[in-house]
Image (tube, rainbow, N blue to C red; front, side, top):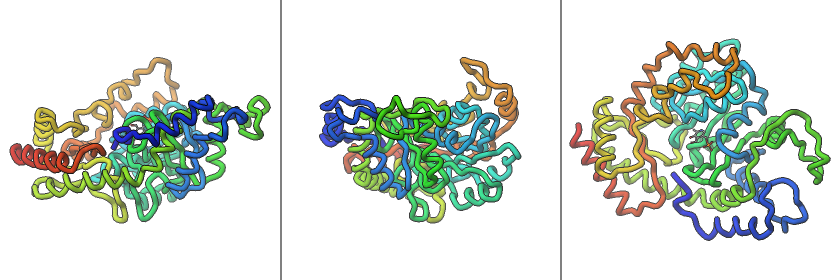
Length: 397
Ligand SMILES: Cc1ncc(COP(=O)(O)O)c(C=O)c1O
C-alpha cells in the first residue's frame, strides 16, 4: 500500500518548488509564492480523482473524521455508529468533538454490518460511519438505506481504500461526507495529511473555516478575515501537500501495481480449498491495498500468522491479537483511560462497553489474515512469496 516505497524526482520537484519560494503555509503570503499553491492544487486534483465538488485538505485522517463530523453539525452527546474493527482513530475523532462512539459488529465484508447498524439506532444517533477497511467496502446501498430511513448523516472513512470503487463511484465519494488519510503508510502519502470530500457546499465551507481557526478565507488579508464560528487548527502545510500532489498523479500507476501483486498471491492461495476470501459487495472493486483471507478457525489463523513471521513473510496481520485495529484489545477505551476528565455524558454513553460482546465480529476477525500489498516487490518476489505462504498454510491445515 505505501506510496513512499516509490518516492521519485516528481515528489522532490514539488517539494523544492515550496522550498525555493519559502512559503510553507497554505494560506496567505500571496506575493512571495511565485504562483505556487500546492494545497489548493492538490485539492483540485483530488476533486477530479473523486469526481466530487469539494475537497478540503487537513492535517491527518483523524482530523478529517473530526472535521467532517463537526462540519455536518455532529457534537456533544450525539451518537455515531462505527464498526468494532477499524483503526483507533475512529473513536478518537468522534470523542474529540464530544460525541459518543457506538461500536457495532462487522460482517464478512470486514466492514459495518447494516443489520447491526439498524439495531443500534437510538433517538440520540446522528451519524453512521462506515470504515472501508483494508482496501474494500461495506454494502453502501444497504447502509445508505438505513441512514435514509432514520435521517442520519452517512460518513465514509476511506483512509485505507483510496482507489477502490463501488458501482462506478470512487470510495470516499459515495456517502454524504468522505475522509482520507495521507499518512506515511497510505497508498498515496503527504508524510502527514488528510482530506474531507463532499458534494455538500455547506459542509465544505464549514470544513474550510473550522480547520483554520474559523477563518472565512474572504479576501487576501488574513488579519481582516472574520470568524463566523469557532474553529481549530487542522491545517496541512505546503510541504506535505507538495508531496501529495506528486503522489496523486501517480495513483493509477500505484493501483495497477497493487492489483498485479494482489492477483498473483490470490491466485496461488485460491488453490487451497480451506482458504476463503472476504466478501466484496456486488458492484464493488477493491483498491487491492490488502489481500484478506479467512482460515477455518482461530487456532489455524494464529499458527499461520506465527509461521508467516518466523519464515520472513512480513506485513501480514492477524487483527484478533493486534492492539490497533480491533475492540478486543482496546482496554484504554473500555476503561476510559484519559489524560483529562471526560464528560459525564460521554462516560454514560460508553457504559455499554463494560458488557457488550462482539461474537459475530470475533468469528470473522479470529479467522482473518490481512496481508499488505507492497508496491516495491518484483514479480519474482511476489510469486515466491505466494508459494511460500501457500506452503506454510498447507503445512498447518
Ligand atoms: C481507517 C483509518 N481511519 C483513520 C486513520 C487516521 O489517519 P491518520 O493517521 O492520518 O490520522 C487511519 C490511519 O491509519 C485509518 O487506517
